[in-house]
Length: 614
Image 1 (cartoon, rainbow, N blue to C red):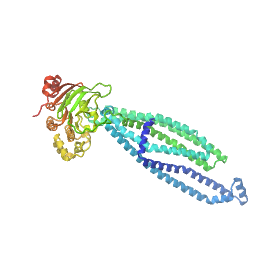
Image 2: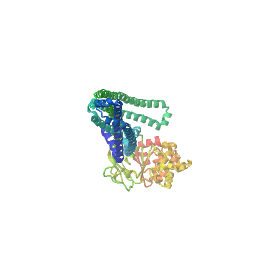
Image 3: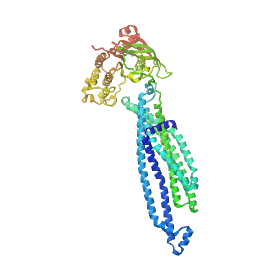
Image 4: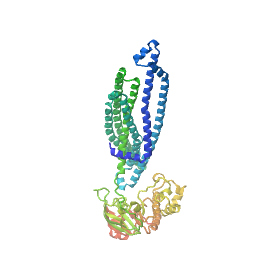
């Protein structure tokens, strides 16, 4: 069991010391009230048995009462007093038991409530920490990890850890108090009888320890299989249209069935371990009870143990094995929590490939000079280079067009500018500052990006345009929408800018989503503009409108454009032609048509059918 990860999780408890100490205090009072009850039960039983004997002696003829009392070791005066006070003693003891029961119930409620408050707050802290970490992790981490797996860790794993911290941890403390307190009372009551059952305790404890060692990897594997189930579900929900269009429902159903079958099989493996463990523990408890009945009965016959003491011992014996029974539940929660804590801290401890240096400085004023100096990039250490020895300089206000086939490295180049990734060799500079020497936040504040895959968030059109500037004025939002040729179609909706976009923008067409994304970037008024094939999903007329607006907005900004249409590159100040991660040609359109066979091929195969509107 990974105790180190679990120990780190438990330290979250002390972020709420008042709640923690109050819950522990309530637990202590409730447990002490529980421990007091068997002693009162003994007093009631002993009072009843004594009263029966006293009453029997006093009902004898007067001539033989003294003789009978002497043989039984009784005092007639004491017997008469005890008979007279017996009912009052029983009532008093019964009322005290009720009082202890009420106290136990009240403080158990307080302890349960506070433990839930504590665990929910810890889950809140963990989810916040996990979300913040996932937000900060570089793209390379997300390239290696699936969304479904991250979702399971942020939901199911945290819930399992919360259950242990809210229930298992305090239950373990309660079991420890109950076990130690019961052993002390049993030794004080009858140490000989205690020694009879004491050897059974290590057997039960060792059994649970072995179970814990077996259970933790089983629960870890169960969580991994649950992650696979969630991944298949998430992929199918996200790609439902593709699945239906490909008539792939039966195949995807079979894939999901396989994932849940594997998860079910692992859960059944865990159930089998439980099915073997608990009957064994109950057997140990029953053996202890049988031993107490036999040896306790002998002591009663020998008059070294009263009936009340034997009943008290039997009740405390239940308290002795109750923590052991609870230990099974605690071990289960602990094994699940340890597995989940390990998975959670794997993310929290994940090394971020892109992060601020300790001495990183703020990037304040930006002119927009972008330089790539001998830049080489690999997605994974030891992998094939995606970019090799890239050198170019973009002057402030220039528009740089990137052309090339699929996999040539266009998108990778623009990903290096805002530090979505860091160069494996060489450096990227903004106004002479290595992007690794400035804070990521200040760098990205000066960059507006419209990615090839448009992402919209749940909310209204206004919310999505103002995503980067939630406090933007209405006039600025409308101006950005007009610049992106989005204002007219927005007003065609009955609710205008208050129109909900649906999940991932499902209520909008591809071209509409891209224009919303462009408006979102333009509202930031960036010094550096990146458009990754941002007009690929619009018709020629819409593209013409967008391009006219962009031509005006690009003035004074350094702009990088990835496009497959000639209209987006004809007016570029510099065109970079990439092939297999290298720049194979550069210049303006006319120069490249004369000097670059690769550019001419791209033009004739991909761009020549494009008609530039007047």
